Length: 285
Image (cartoon, rainbow, N blue to C red):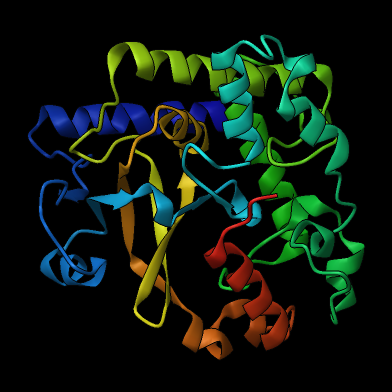
């Protein structure tokens, strides 16, 4: 059923485009524009997303881990690609990714968020697949099924008929087949960009996507789509990376009391800020 819905949506886009309604153009291009703050570009645009170049040092990726991007990152995605390039790990079994999946196996949402013990016991009892960030408006029970669909659809998109029981790409345990799939994706993305260059779609289709995190007029870019590409571009030593930034949400540290996860009492303000600060600072372990 999900595949039929996806196919229907694609067909509808093609129909609208043929009659002159280009629904795919939903991003405004500011890639070559100079700016001091992304906020000034948001005010200049009436689109839901803008394309901008951001310093790789300000990018955070791999979901709740919030790893730093860049060639010196210790993120398992980055380390794995570097090992492939320098010849120290030419297959999944010998890679940092395999080691990561074997060692980072959170049993709960709180452990996945690097919280020792959350005040709300729901976060301590529900599995890691129900994870959500304090600024997201989610129900963790519903999120478990939602995440399963996301992972399974992503697997199918890459020609692997693997269920969520085979594992999540952001933590272990995973089956050998799932680990190998993620390893091959990383290497294939790296080789493609190394050989053909990095391409951005100015209409806004399938770009690396991010939301903005803000603290004291400093900004970080939290990747929501394109994790493998971030790893590849990091290893290729890109100093700036074009991102498609969502304009409808800026997560401001000063507004923690308004975050849905805090209002619904899944997180205390202190816990929410711990999660935010860890990501904003950037994890490197």
